[in-house]
Length: 230
Image (cartoon, rainbow, N blue to C red; front, side):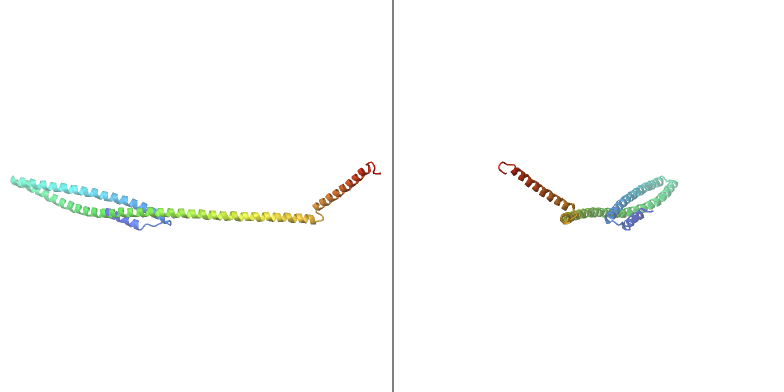
């Protein structure tokens, strides 16, 4: 697979990525994938740069070999050595073909490298823009979530306060009901002939009357025993 096709697949996978349900999680996952894609793209461009360097080195070497063969042929001609000149020229023709091939390859790789550099710059710029957007949205999401948590706590506290007030009212109503019940029972105890409280009251009244009678009798005896009372 060529380097350009690899980067094209990276860009396509970035555009066709499926987002999860949570938008912040989806954005974070997309950001992570973009960073991985950018790393792969950088390695691809670096690999292509190494290829371009090797091709350029081979082309320079071929050019140097061609120049050397041409000088050798010139010396052979100068020395009237046609056979050596022919041999040098044949090698020069072979090197010339190799140099032309290497030159075309170098031009193709150089054009591809410049194109990939442009794609890489686009990826880097896109990643930077998305990183800023992600951090901004993440901060907004956190602030919104915090506000919702605070409102929820306030609502819960208000609900608890209302529940406490309701329980207090119910407790007060129960206390009043018990007091009323106690008063009613007290009233019924006095009005019920079979009530022990009414019997106790009668016993207390009889005991009080007996004591009063005993007191009158005692006073009468005391007064009768005084001198001059006969």
